Length: 199
Image 1 (cartoon, rainbow, N blue to C red):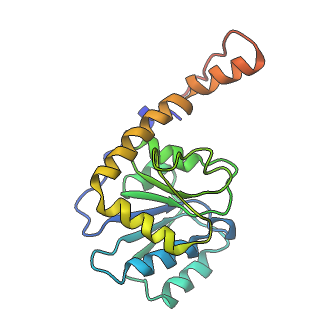
Image 2: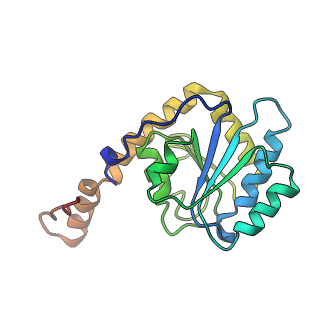
């Protein structure tokens, strides 16, 4: 990614801490685990508000879970967005509770945008997030540990700032065109590869 393209001005003044999910709504994403975590956090004052961005086959099922768990005041379903920046500017934390990812691009986009991230210790996610350094990782299928990780990020501003700072540095080191093409060039044993022209 190009970190400069993710310099966003996030909206302010929200009454509650804003947790976000961005992605397809299908079973592998395990959004119901995130709903369960929000329900656990709702038992205390200062519960976060969950914003779900995306569409897919699980949308109706997730909407039914929101009603069943009595979370209608704490969860907003937004549907798909044209650009990830449109969603990232509306949240304070990105959570990806998937059981697997081909590659956690949305995590890198959040890291580039200065949004702290929580993911599961699953393939494709742990390749992006360095636990305790650039984000937090929790076991797959554990709403309790997911809730605890969310609570940590919500309540510890020093942790948030540290994760954001190190994540942006990591994006620049590992996930920009310059860094990726350098690795390709080394792999292919050639001198260099020109980055694509964007725009």
